[in-house]
Image (cartoon, rainbow, N blue to C red; front, side):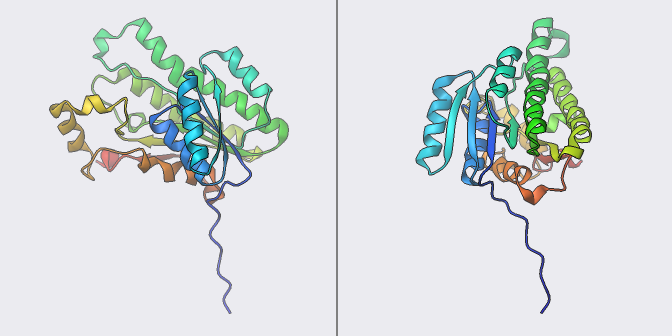
Length: 255
């Protein structure tokens, strides 16, 4: 009888996962997906009430989740946070911000706000997490939530594009630095996703129409569209995947 190969597991039982910016929207959905796949998930954000509610909802659904208030822009607090805990096997860098405006109107404060959170904080959270992985020789998966705007340009998105293009390069370099230690680094690059934060923008008919004109599948993204992607990149199913970007954009960047 012919021996068939066995599909690598998408399960995450016995693994510890950390999701930043997990209070709502994309971050909460990714935390829920990892928990559903069996991971013990820690939800991190500055807003303690939101992550406590999110962790409680995940537990009610049968998952294993806890909340930990942390400002990822406070690098001393980030270092302390990871030093006090065993290594995480999965890190999802989701915390981020955007200040869309014409490049001629961008201030230094705008630049610092976007680049410091989207890039600087992400780098040092990843560094602290990777150091623990290296110390415990645990291996792991580093997943950074980028954007389709890390692959193309967009009007009024100069800072956001700069941060997300930089994130793509950073992830590739991390993949090379850490591959010998069994640590993978990848990005997920979504198109526009409807969340409580973005929903008001889609009430502008002209803006919604301009977005739908670029998304070839003909609809705005949902948080559910990203949940399978994060489980895949966290699990053994993607064991040979590192230094790349999983673009979830409905065809936006295909032309």
